[in-house]
Amino acid sequence: MAKAISALDWVVVRLGDDHNWWVAETSDPVRWDVDGLSIVDPRQVQYLVELVDPLRDYGFDQDVFEAAFIPFRIDKDLGHGKVRLRRMKESLFESDEKLFALPDILDEENGPYADLLDHLTRCRVKMLNDLFKFESKLTVDEVEDEIREDQNSSFIQGKAVHCFEELTAILDYMPAGYDPDEEAPAKGVEEESDDDDLPELDEEEEEKLKNDESLKWDEDEEEGDDDENKDKDKEKDGEDDDEEESSDDEDEKPRPRARGKR
Image 1 (cartoon, rainbow, N blue to C red):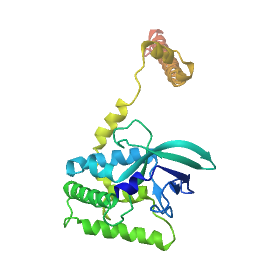
Image 2: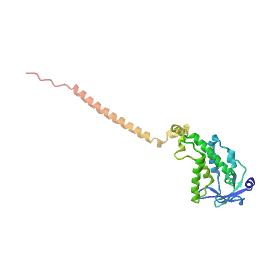
Image 3: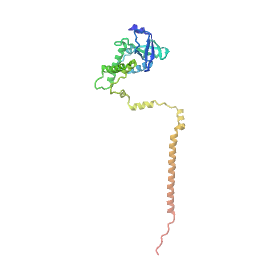
Image 4: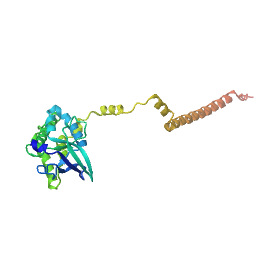
């Protein structure tokens, strides 16, 4: 096994129609069959590293993950959607390099990659049983059977299953009828976090916003409405005053004398 891996010095990868990278050629064509051989790109590696982080509380072993992959970095762009990769001795978790990760599948049944799939499944099942109150505890066999059924459907359709999809099927697995969003924070907390994301303005920016004419439109309309209401009130008050004055004038006018009886 070790000799087989050490003999693999470089690979040529191509970008598939599914936007995943697939191995087109290797330095060891005898042991490595490139038919359906997939490789994880740097973006996907980073995503997987983030997905396994919550599993550390449930027995995740980083060494098992590292042992399951052979790291590569870009050596040369060959054009036409192909890139030559050179093998590296770097940690997928600690390296600053943008690394590709080729799963070690020389022994598909008992090799390091097969061990990783089993390890991740057990960690995921343990985490789900801890976070959710299932009627009966979830088992590793149930998860493996469900995932295998989906993969068999792809094989029947003549589609090769990419290793990244194989890994995320485990790391994102949820039983039917359960939603991972149920573990999301309360709405109030989300609203507070949204407010926290708003940028802070300095005094100069605040002053610019205050003097921005486009932002004064609504205020001017409100002020205009207030002025109109005030004018109407004044007119109404003036009419009331006129009525009061006219009534006062009538009171001040001398009343005609009552005619005496003759």
